Image (cartoon, rainbow, N blue to C red; front, side):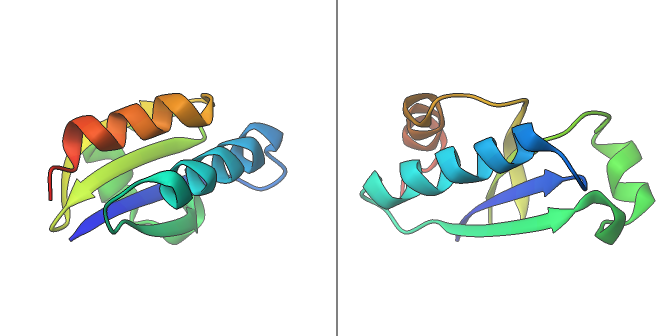
Length: 90
């Protein structure tokens, strides 16, 4: 299962922009992708440390719950689309 997990923090304008751009890219994408948006407080600290997440928004591209790509910051929809095209083959 292709999934994008967007980790955000409260009051983060860049996080809102990233959410909008990822949702736009997923709408245009030709494969099924699930989007999950979580505040970093809702993620286990162990996971945050293991994945070296220290800035937000962090966008994790996952296949069957395994991270295949991680991006930090905000990008245009076309960049998110390209990353999905590179990593989500099915």
